Length: 519
Image (cartoon, rainbow, N blue to C red; front, side, top):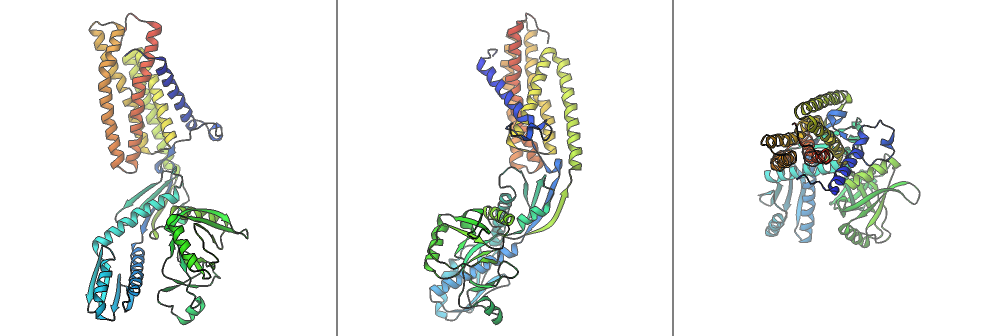
């Protein structure tokens, strides 16, 4: 057990050096080497309770989702009835239902078959030749859960595209989402990113009449809809309701410039979207093809030739707007609009007080542990204190390298870890004392102390590590922050107790070779 090979010493020194390098940005003043790019590490991310930030509570507008699903359902019924030569009338969506009337009783069996193929979660009621289709309770619950979960994922992609900001995004209740962004003191920016549904569709323009004619008549042909253009002076368009290609088929979007050097957004489609896009454009050469974003026609270029996997969105955009639009399209469309119910900007003042209080608590705890180890174990206690300092450096380095968010409970986890870090050393030193009382030599006592204590050390740390793991898996927000710092502290304290302290003791034994030991 006292054999400590040279490669192990080099490994320990390498880990310590790496820890110093990654922890150093947290102690360097701003503007020096910390920002020069010479050091690989970054400062630890502070949570909302430590550095302030933005707090938004938003409602997912489920009524819009239900209406869109019912409209889509109505268009599916229209297409199926036409394909199977079923005569119908009064197909409309109102009062959270799709209603339709059959003109011939002979079509009843065919209509029932179509209704059965619409999918689960629907209720079909009949009154003579009139049918009403609506969502049942199970269907509404499934739709709500899917919409909220998808909204949370899209929110995360939009506000944290690089995965480094560590936002807190949590579901609250049935249809609410809480978003907390540490360090972001301008909620308007976040609201602008999340305020656009960014629903992109490509639909054919109905050339049977213009938008101005539709406005004059006050109606549009069945299966079409009147949409405004994207701009105050833009004309309106009559487009077919059927979506030919949707934004869900996008494979990427980037800000660019068109042939006239105007800001635009270039996009690529996935394999399915490219195939569908090519089929639609190839079959409709010479027809206008509307690019629709959030219910407004951005542009409606005429199809000149068959187009496959890429295209360009042009309009009255600025460069900043195209960058933002490209980000939003890459993240994906929100399945429903988000309504801001509550917003708060949390200043850093309270967080600064918490950081100061946490520093004081950590320093007091550190000093007391150092003094206790020195008084209780003398030289070996001093070696354990050195290992404790290494442990703190490794914790800071791990938090910096992982860019984990440090919250106030996380500081509590670090303070707790400092006490636990010397626990393994205490077990070893007490075992050594027992061996010395039995009259064994110094070398034999130290060797026996480590051999008999190592299993207890591993067991105690593993059980605590499992507890931290379950806190992280089943906890949320601050609980996860506490679990992360606790788990990191357990791993680093295990390393410093088993490797660093033992290496220091072995080096001391090799140099001094004492015949007696007072412990």
